[in-house]
Length: 489
Image (tube, rainbow, N blue to C red; front, side, top):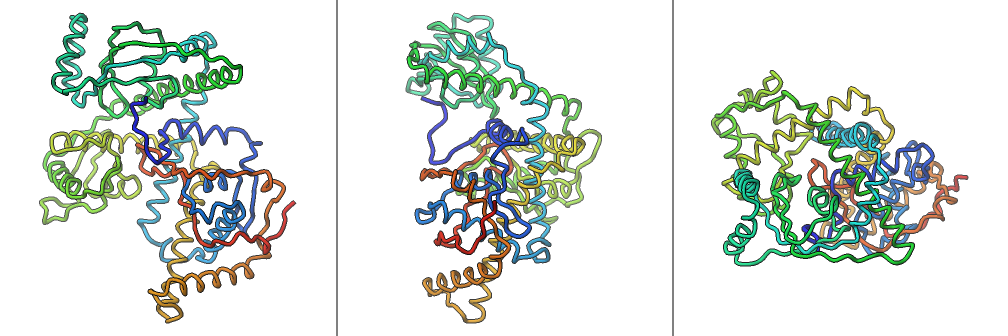
């Protein structure tokens, strides 16, 4: 059993997503970069088609492969119809969002360049981890949300390891239960947990920790029992060997990435202005506490308190690397980089600390982005394709709303007449088909090779400003007819 609760979402960690995304683009002849459809000046690659199909929720009547492609084509058509001069593109908030998406992609590319691509695997280490991967542990554990408490426990165990059993019993009395989990190699746990259990064999009674988790919490574990489950078939053994290599790659990459970030941030200490911090933190926690719908690590702070709240936008907020950031500077940065908390367990007792940590992470990303610009990662084709993908999705939604709103204003349709709206919308799209048919080509040789699943996934990446792996599926028309298109050989 994993320490991570099962959800209806495909939750992808930032490191795993970067590996997943960037491995696919690490060579020039990858088939997923082949152009599947051309719509005027816009393109749909095989990778984009698969991402939009498999990592989003598609309504049941949109799961057909032809219908899927038809909707993606219409999305591009609507983006073309919106043009280059419209209110959305002129909206500073929209431009800030696109900038944030682009810079997040640049940081992922930086991760690949300075960390993932530099890892070299040792065959002995892989073999050792492969043997241990057969092991399932039964663990008694508890999570510590307080750094000082974790350090006190660590001090006690360092000086008197024999007190581990006593400590666990005390915790059981407090919790009124014995927190026991079974953990196997394939569980998607924090890499710190995984590395602690599957680097060297642990015997019954061994206490591990407290270990700091990636979200800032700490965990302490005690081995109650373990069982080996050998793999018999050659296929299972080959699959496991591959999984072990990927897991070690991921862990080593994570360490290199952390080291790189530490180097970038060395000497850059944030000094907060106490008055400004107090005002903003108090205001932010009230928004958080009063908004029961917030269940994400991402907390959008777009409205900074007015001067009447006790602070002016030109007031100093913090200093870092000998540079003064005002509240207005901070607000502008938030427009492209929403604040991301390290934990969901926010309350009035820990909010100030977590608010500071979220700002620290914001500034870390700021400096990482500067490094990415220095390396010209903003010019990479994959980065620009990602930005264009999101841009087209936003423009298509914008254009669709304008079309419907215009028809309502002219009395061509009525808000309560749902069937009438659908008929008008489909008729409008069919006219667009005629307008753009000569400019649309499909590579049917590649399209015929693609098979889609009927399994719904909604892929998100926890811990990043823009967690959606890809824009939502554009459910524009239920028709799967592609007869208006041309074959591209």
